[in-house]
Image (spheres, rainbow, N blue to C red):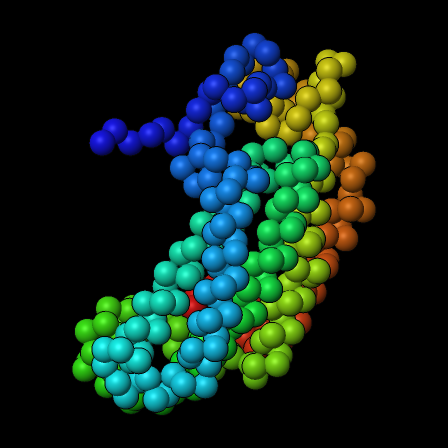
Length: 273
């Protein structure tokens, strides 16, 4: 079977701001879903909702008992179901994210991305218990389960990584709050930054152009071209300094709050888990 290309130049959305560049490639997202309103996408969203609720009902409060079993009802079965569900949610989220980032200036893409992120956050709230409950099981019990049950042992690398989060794990209610608030805190300001950047235009020789073309001018061989690009970038960024300052300060404070509550001593500690 011949693999389909990940990029396509056939889409009208590929038309660049500079006609001299010709038709540029765009992401070929049909390998995920044909369109935002494709029946398969709608069906997978409903499937994800059904499976998330069923997973919570089946396993919440029962993982310690499952760790003592093999086969049906064992921890390996729970991990396999969680892995499949995580893949499905990842597929949905990837499609929404790539659709949005393919053209962040398109309001319809922004709304689609925001709506899907909200739905995924809601579904994730039903799965949040899984990692938290796993980390409350004694290390000896988890290690024994991995050694005894091949289905559980298959997920050993993931379980080992998960246990590293244990000292910084909050109680269930606080974790739920952090998850639900993420949509209106860091995620919201990251999106504000992306949309602000996509709307900026930089004037060079009387022509307004997007960021990518202007940045590309910084590596042109002619010094005058590089200088013009640098001046245009500095001017436009300076005019939007208040917005960028607000975004940066808000994100920095948001991380400081999270790190303080979780007990991270250094700003980079969470990156090393």
